[in-house]
Length: 515
Image (cartoon, rainbow, N blue to C red; front, side, top):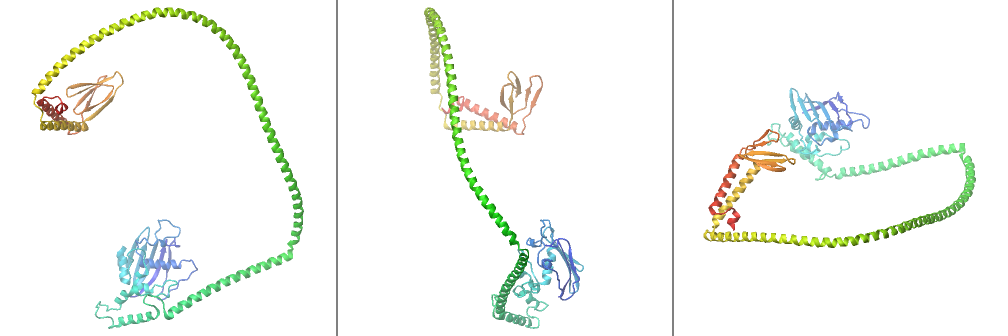
């Protein structure tokens, strides 16, 4: 089987947001060259994704265009010749998952196309997650990525190689060229064992070469660091020489010396001014303290002056009130004398009124006592009548047989049935709630009875009813529910059965029967 890639096209894949195409591949070795970060590794990754990644995989986020959101759909398109027959494979990932394989006149899509390629080339797909080298089979032996050319692991392609070395007819008992396939495997295994251990670790010459390469790489890194440091030092020395030559020509230190002397002179004058400033600040602090003390003294004097003025105003007010009090005392004495005369007259009138009130009180007590006598006589008559009824009831009770427990249980069951039927009727019945102003009334007519509605309240309507409005007019109320009439009949039957049972036992209510 001979495979030759003839064209590669990518779009929305890593750095290639716009479509990018490579064609003109020739049979044999093809070399793709470009500057660093031009996208060569991205094209290799695109080819690997086209063959080894499922188009519905969620582990290919590394294919998403740089800086793009969730709407990107990386796409890879490959044209290749397989045993001279043209094929075209198109895969898109992430936002638009699709796979199409055109093999001559035959076209496959989705997982069917992917499984066909895997069977054709001798590899498999990862059951979960991204594709790994152990899934690449025989193509993985020919897939060498940058920096991993020294690694060789045929364990994942052993079954595919063994099948390829067997008889094309599939006869396991007749291997290709007798035992040539097994002999080739044994030879390859012996050569591998010379360089690798059973666990895959390097040994012998291979291990020595790896150690020498690591040592040489370390030496190279150290030499590179030394060269870089030396170059930086040379560049710094050249820069310093240029600056030194410029300074020798310009002699900037002469001007700096003059500026230094002038600065020293200014510094001496500033120090003298600073000393004077410190003395002035000390005197300022003393003056501020003196000012604060004087301000506090002024505040105290002002408070004392305000207090004295308040006391003067209080004394004047007290003198005025004293004068008014003397005048009031004189008026009060005059009024007291007149009041004493009125009191004496009132005492005489009170004595006469007291005698009259005492007479009226005694007369009222006499009337109340006569009324009490009449009321006690009526109570006595009622008590005698009640005593007679009690004697009659006792005689009747003595002649009436006692209610048996079974009859009482039946009576309780009938009462419970009547209450349950009433609850079911109330649950289904229409509730008519009303709130009327004072003086206004409505008339509700149901089951041949008429009821007057006033103020506020609630009525249960379990049968067709008519509500008469004050100014004329009627509201016809038809309760809903198909079983309302039946529930009403059940309640009426249960109530009638309870009343019949009470009458048969000669009692008016269940509590009387229990007693």
